[in-house]
Length: 630
Image (cartoon, rainbow, N blue to C red; front, side, top):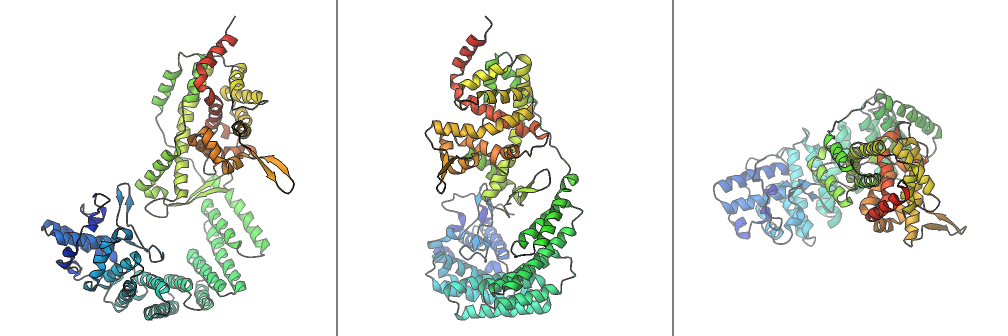
């Protein structure tokens, strides 16, 4: 794309280049000269023409025209979202260096200039875009709304008679552009008056073209126009549903299970709106069975088959009864999930950690036991939450395809235990996609820390010093993180950890974390109990309850970086979810020897030792006096 495209300029955000045109610039410029011989009913085509005209005008030093064409390029390049009534125009591009134009950029004088020149725009698509934009920015401009509807209907008619062509369909009257025009026209009509003449025309066009699509068996158009009809309540919803059902019945032998599923769900929606609940339930069952058939066609790929069986069960939840069928599908799902692990193959990505290992050795060798343990505690520190979020958002912006689709986390039996939504497109990612990216990045960081630092340091400590339980007990006795009566348990757990008995370490240490967090909160004056007001029985909050109800208190004590790390390692389903795995006996024999388990044990040791770090010299001196040979 040309470097000089108006909507990707690096000009300052206070005065983007597409807002530089003045009233005088518009008065002296032929606004539609770039559109000669244009026949596409597509704003993108218009934007490209204005872009080329802008570049030509700059080359010819015709700066007023260049500024005007820059404005019109920005207006026509906005992303058209007619199904979003309150925000139908969005940025076409959002990236690390900024964004393209949005409707709000034109608020005030720019939209006033556009509205003043509205009658000079003859191209129906351009005139509709400008009038609609002006009305969005000032809802009091009812004349702009009427002009927008009139222009949209003119564009629809021109597509139908062939004056304008739709980019996405051979059947011009039922193409993508025509349907989008109807969506937006009806959105405006609903807001300015359902009985206004333009709105009536749009409603009639919708019904006529929906019936035409049904008659011709145009499946995609039937789905689009039926959804439009149901959303705006133009026709009797039961009639719309019946037309859809008649269509899908003709596809009973088709293997396009997705299309059939969509149609049945749309029919169910219509019957529901028409208060025909029994028929709606039948449609939902048919929709679910389409997904079952799709799963059965994917039996060679257990992961896909399990996904569609799960989706079928989800749709069956809308239907009362049918317990036997639901049970049958659950059993089939479990059997299918059992095959997922067999069909999955591992892949690896090598990372050179020689430099990390070298730094660890240099940091430890020659130090006393207590000196080594101090360095062991300080090898890693969790990053700040804001840094993690910023890095994740930046990665998604720079590599949008990496987060485009939903991510599914499976357990060792193939069951889905967590789903993270994808971005669904380009631009700013939603919260779920960012959290998933953070989980992925943190898994890599924990792996590097566990392999390159924790395990290397552990081996150096136990091979250069005799690490006894009494040495670890001395540390535990002095830690405010450990409640009275739990020093021996912690000591035994840390001894197993340093000795390499990760099974013993993980099952001893992880259950202690919850009680220690309550202990620290109580030491800071917080009530960690909850009361059942019916039975007047008090119970301690679980670790999940602490993070849900007392997160602010935890953050104030441990810091947001540490509480975030604890949550990601022990509680988050997007992460290793270690607390749940240990509590319910779900760890495989090999899991405790993995990176996440090693990091979890180190993190607990870190929490025990962190309050002592600033007093470590005194602690080491006391240790040497107690344990030095006489």
